[in-house]
Figure 1 (cartoon, one colour):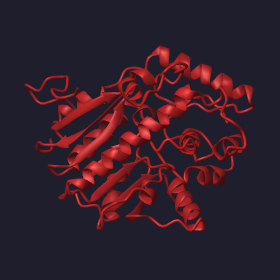
Figure 2 (figure 1 turned 90 degrees about the horizontal axis):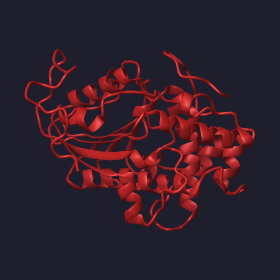
Figure 3 (figure 1 turned 135 degrees about the horizontal axis):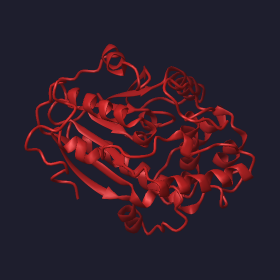
Length: 320
């Protein structure tokens, strides 16, 4: 199961980088059972079970306690992150946005569990095998979307905007975009292309949410410790090998230079607000910053999108 990322690699939810989506759902399932009302994802456990990785299924269903394998910081981190993105979408629809795009949707179940206003269309973009699996599995469970869910089968390294357009996406109306837990799994140049494309497809008033996370050696060391714990349980998965570590453009600054007005909150601040502790944080969460904001400027042309326009500062002016 231990693989290293490379250009053009392929995966599903039980192999390669796709396993990270299954592990995220497994952690949400554990977090949902704790009953503190921060998150409630009733679909996480059955989706993990359907993927069929035995150890992850035992953890997701509660047959095996998380112990030190899924640490306290990781479980609380799932609560904080899920709540941040849930509230982002609810806030966006509260101001009238009815077009939503979830990039690299994986086993995200928001199209089924959030109270979307009438008329909301949720586009879920992911690889064909991923969207087909989730659609089929949730239908088999009798689950019904709470919005008009439209699955867009496309790899984010390919021409996903064409697939999104063919599915009915309208760039002339405001959109709420999420890129949750995604950027570190893209090569730096692919990250920039994706953020450029999101900008180009966003009408003024659109909203975006994502996170900025470090890619330094300390993060790799922490991920290696996590991988060692999993290997001790017979699960050979190299977490660091799934990411593109190293230098990349910081997402908030990059977006701000392209007309987005952003605010941000660090995981450390979210943990403090919820009374959580970052002790035992091997995932590098303490340096992660969640950012969200609104498109307030004209879209840059493709000929100028590779660098900020003259006079625009390299750092965002309204990131707090």
